[in-house]
Image 1 (tube, rainbow, N blue to C red):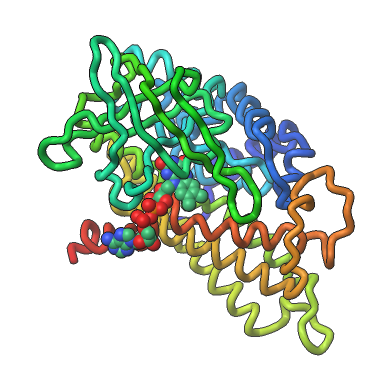
Image 2: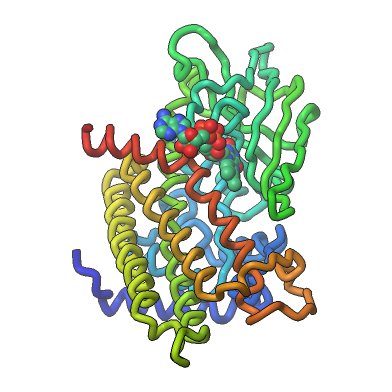
Length: 401
Ligand SMILES: Cc1cc2nc3c(=O)[nH]c(=O)nc-3n(C[C@H](O)[C@H](O)[C@H](O)COP(=O)(O)OP(=O)(O)OC[C@H]3O[C@@H](n4cnc5c(N)ncnc54)[C@H](O)[C@@H]3O)c2cc1C
């Protein structure tokens, strides 16, 4: 694989760069670079800017409104967005449910939902996990019983990310209990405004509200919102997880974090009056994580290319490799930043995450959000399927162990 960019790719990068420089609101970029809290409006503003340009879903086929970019162009776009401080495009609609609708949905579902995902009209969230059904997802109990032209859904979902803002939720439900647990699951699209749905916040240790419980009490869902066949939803579920795990790798964002780490290391003192960047052991650790990131980038390109060549094939077990390595790198970067600032990383000042905060940070300004970021990053090896389980998948399905 030739990793040097061609003249066309360089021209493409320049176009993307110029567009972002002109259109990304500077106050949003400042929040991302400063590690500040992003709100619904920040995500939606950027989503809509990209949607107007036709660039919000780089991985979508042209027939559904994608820009028709190849994998290298997608990677360049991801890098440029991350480097400029653009918020990530939230994956639940664009990268998770949309590929499922494209692959398994009927014509009416494609026609209705896909344009609304592109435009940002609908905010989606994910209703997979339940208390007692995380890694062992097939043991889920939320039930959907058929009653004429609708299902009646009852049960509880948990760890639901940003569902407090969502218009729609995709849910795995149990529609049969005989046979293997995987064989009685269906994939439903549910309007969050339907009576009987309650969203309750789960406060995290840092006080933030990022995740929720979602309760379903006699929620009526039209049968028209069933994706694929009844009881065959496990296939949709796995297809979606392949896309979710590929997306978690976050190569562009890791490159931005690596750059930030190097800037911190240049500014922080080490022994003898030198900067930390000159400390051989610290440089060695930065170099190690940089090498791992380069390897991840190449692997990411290989997986995305294979996916593109294979048409509608979902990323298979290789998506698990991206998920494990990507999240390990994200965690290493956050650890190194904390080590670089030393004791100044210890105070946790939630107000410092607000762009408007006018307080004086203890130590350098870049140290203030680091402990919040460090602890938040611990989640990455759990969500999207914990890394231990991903290693089992790689061992069994990729390595045949
Ligand atoms: C911040 C965050 C956001 C999330 N957002 C969403 C969301 O939006 N929607 C959604 O549906 N879900 C979401 N999740 C849920 C996430 O997908 C699950 O937490 C994850 O799949 C793990 O399930 P669990 O928490 O039930 O852990 P468990 O399955 O109980 O596992 C606990 C531990 O045991 C280990 N373990 C379990 N079985 C094995 C095994 N066979 N071999 C080796 N180790 C094993 C696990 O790896 C883990 O370390 C989110 C989770 C987090 C933390």
